[in-house]
Image (cartoon, rainbow, N blue to C red; front, side):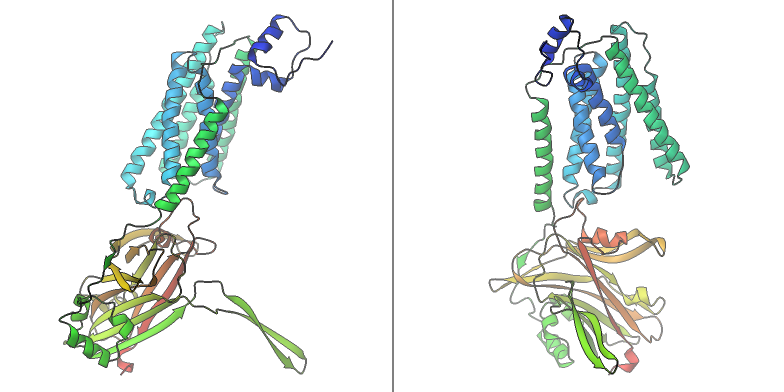
Length: 506
């Protein structure tokens, strides 16, 4: 007798074959593919497992839930007309999928990190409520199916899964960091899923059969469509949601009108001209009556440089010395201190940056300021707000914009050396356009001596985004506040300090 063609067999042909009492049972994998109940429950249980797993490497914490949610959608879609509870499960799966995939897309933009914690908390609570409700309906749906199949209703494993999610959520809310309890919870989770799978097989062995709800879009097309929407949405997020909306305006050629005498005085004292031309009239006016100017300039690289070898002939042979050298140093940082008249030491501090080579601007930039009042506690105190702006040139026109954000941030960072630390620092956040040249900017602040000071120590920490390829998207300011090492991250931080002793500088 010719062996049946199992590979090309559909559900109708499979049923006809069973009705004809074929003596040769089909392979197990074929049965799973052509029996809707088994395939649907397999997808649902696999989806539950994948959406519950958290593996924080290779983006699996995003990929596994995304795949799991597709499987749950397909599984509940096939069972949505079996009973009311399973129909509700499908509706809840749609809502959870919208939440998950919208979050994945939104994660590709810098705006997700700016959503308030209360909104994120509310969305998390909502998603948990949908999950618990779905598990409760799954329990009711399985019981209804058992009754329909003539089996005693028992679906305690679904309730156990609901309890498991509740305990896991409670441990997360309490910040539990132990190891033993999570391992116990993992073992319990595996046993619960195994029990649910046995329940599914029990219904299948009892001869329970369903006719899948009719659909206009096949499972394969639906899965591909969801994947396409998420991928395209993330790409659009990376391209369109990666920069701050800056208010660029053409600079007024007469903006320094009225402060020409102060400009001339500062230049006579040695104030760098390329820095002075970028200051606002208000910051120049703040330097009226300047007594002296102290400045320092450093060119700093953001590239990886190259290894250069130097060979020296000695009596014992050749000695090779290798060191890293930088042929290009893209960022020029200039620190300027202007002493002002007054009974106590009064100074105006400027930190100016200039990109001498366009490094490629892919997203956000940030500056973290450590003023002298922070680094030398009790010696200096700030006497005014931090000011500044950013500039660039294009087609012979200078464009200026205020920083997107300029102010103090209180944040908690984590370090392998110091642990968690809470700090309050001044940050400037901004984005540079991908066109133009001479991208630059500055920060300025006034300070006054509390007591006779031996040192002015003001730090300028510039964080540059080196690539657009990052997921989830993070701003340069958030990266700096996280306390993470640059390493292979999309960001690189350059630190520079204006340091001198006022009594030792003429």
